[in-house]
Image (cartoon, rainbow, N blue to C red; front, side, top):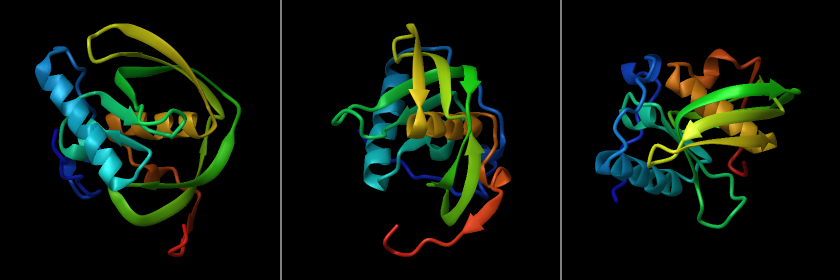
Length: 157
């Protein structure tokens, strides 16, 4: 595994729609493993493949629900959204920028695992927020486009 460079908001890869993953092979497994290691080192809660310069539909989420287990979503699609939550978001590709974003409170995601097997997950709260944020990356959208109020966070945040 390797730590990959997280690109910043000015990189064109973050503003392009990602292509579906078609090959579920060792190359994908290495990408996912590298993304896990990169996310852990960056101490974030989510990372999308375009954030490490790869235009593929792959996402890693780590909201700390289960020790050392991160959620891998390949070719994810949100099937259902409900409710509403408004909270402060940030992004590893937009350091030191924070703002309030409205997201669904609950969602159902359909995706494939690293071996191509389909599954569905029901997510709520932070997990739902994170999934929506990361799936936006796959569409070439940054959270900055959705902020309704920017905020400054101190060192304690």
